[in-house]
Amino acid sequence: MGWKKRLLALLCAAVLVLGPGLVSTAKADTVEIYLMAENDQMLTLPLEAMPTWIGGSLYVPYIAFDWTATGVNLGVSYGQIQGDSGNSFMLYSLSGTLTFDLNAGTCVDRSGQQLEMRAVSRNGWIFVPLASVCSYFGLRYSYTPTNYGTLIRITNGQERLGSEFIQYAQDPMRSRYNAYMKQLYPDNNTPQPSVQPTPAPSPTPSPGEEPERAQLTVYFAFQCTGGGGVTQILDQLDGAGVKALFLFRPEELEANEENLRRIVGSGHAVGLSVGGTTLSQVEEQLDQGEVLLDRLVRLKTHAVYLEEAGRDVSSALSEEGWACWSPQLDQTGDTRSAATRSNALMNNFDSRTGSVRVMLDDRPGTADLLDRLLPRMEREDYRTRLALETWF
Image (tube, rainbow, N blue to C red):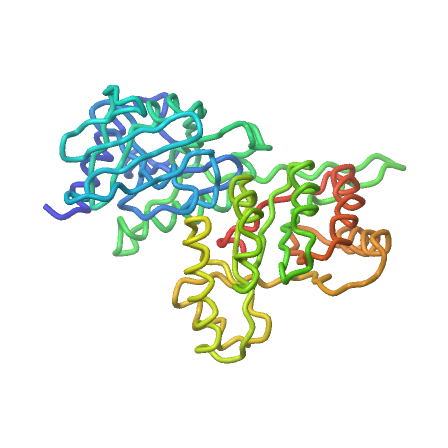
């Protein structure tokens, strides 16, 4: 039996286990689809890694707890245990460690005590029990029926959206649902959800009342080229609860080891900023940066900002799995006062809808800019989101 047939059988069984209270509004004759989100970010998982029910428990792929794979730092990390079998791994945080042995079907905590949970292998992926792992690390989870399957969402208290996240995530849920259906029904007989989301009507403003402004999401990146202001920038961002992408030139990484640890530990993202105009020049710098990041903070990044190279290099890197950051508002090298720069950005934000990608540098003046800018953005209800690779 092929893996698709086995997966279909498992998923159909999952529908029976869930019962009517947890069946989505998709047609009853279609496969039950499970989507995943963490905090305020949807995850993108291959069909083979779709959450599934095993022995009456809901299992999710282990990468859900590996922030280097998801881009969402839940405070839990993944570690491979070196050994002959290659079938043991750890999930760990500051508060505890879970060590899974696939061959033995066991799990022990940091003190060596055996726990009533196990990891399993399905379709070439390793799955772990959602409820047990979340309980151990103090995480929360929910599963909610939607028009695009059941949404499983894991949170750690740093999420900004509550139940309204479902409406916020309609488009990414739809795209993931359609991608799954195309794989399950390659003959283009893709079943569609029986209920389409209905946009909320826009209220008509009363006479003399200003119409409500469309919400704007701002993605921040900081190009770190030796300006010396990274620590102060982090102070401003962490104080405001804002996450950002930090782009380092390879030659600046070693001098910023302490900052890198803080960036990673605080849930920000790290990428590389590289010069060069040819693909070989860029790849040489990327190789250097990858080696240093792995040595300094055990981090593998896929984010890159090309300082000089053109679209042909960007396209080639994309085929190699790199995500190229492309700012829409670039204030790097801007020597105007913090007040002037803050006003300029706010004026630009006021004229935009949807989202905007902003890049600043690591000069000390940038922290002064953030000190003025972030409170104004909060008052105007502008959202900030971490610039993950899927949003470049």
